[in-house]
Image (cartoon, rainbow, N blue to C red):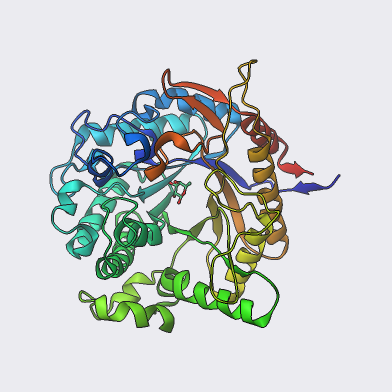
Length: 440
Ligand code: FCB
């Protein structure tokens, strides 16, 4: 048996996002978000599911924090619903909304859990979407004001602030593929959104620091490595070309201050709101960054996505391949000058069943987490500066266009009764945290 010991100050956590768990979609003065609008429009989400109630976390956050304590978590990553605190996106503040996050943060601190806050995990105020959403550059300035408001209220207790979760998904899944809110299928919009979100990130980091210079500011990116099907040079070249075209779209501007030639060639004609100084604004120095890792893509010499015979695939049809995580991290730290890293999301959806004994035996999820933690540790031994790990997710929750059909939680949620049950993987994770090591 091999034992993988983690450094004593390694930050063990779990992550969620506001729209996926909170519910209370129209309570206490909250404004409508683009996800409220999108899920209320039929045909957008599996089974017509919505986040109206979700895990009812808005009302049950105390119980959920008690669960976090049971798991022994050291940190909790959550996001703020912008329209809950500023219903129209700019202007009038909803004090009830601010009070909710204030109580949440107080309870986290009382339970000795470090709050990791994400300002934007996809629930844009609908009122801003009505004025063009992220395609309108003004949204970036509204975002900076919202960031400043949140820092003023919570900056005395929340030290780690991420501006955005997964800009690539915001821009392309929401505006090119149409699978997420606001549901557009338009290349021009997608590229302008990508750019304006990065501008908003830069402005947001400045706003966070201006409001409180002692805070740590960062961003969370989703990265899917593209790996060749075989070790032939043709396959390697095809995989590398796709990596350059897609994954560097955000990496290069944020960490190097320019678009890669491959990304710029495609984006340039659409960047009608580009201003001098944007690239410097986008490339703010960061205190940390987050990587959300789930899987990899395997690419044939013809540039096609292929499935790997014999490999395990999850309910999302994502390949389970933990060594790719290690390779990805090592590569990133070779290619870029990067700040310390947190794995801000990692996890897997499998079909869970509640057994006759009332327990949820989920060996495949447990093994997924184990393998990814081992490869995180191996990347650290290779020299990658990983400071912590957040499992996705604390709870089963609303999985965007898939509604409630995909369960990622360490904790099972019965959506009829809102009963929470810690799965075997959650119990195992608690043991890992307690012992600060993974055994294989
Ligand atoms: C990520 C999202 C997160 C969750 C997981 C499965 O892309 O950030 O909200 O949906 O995928």
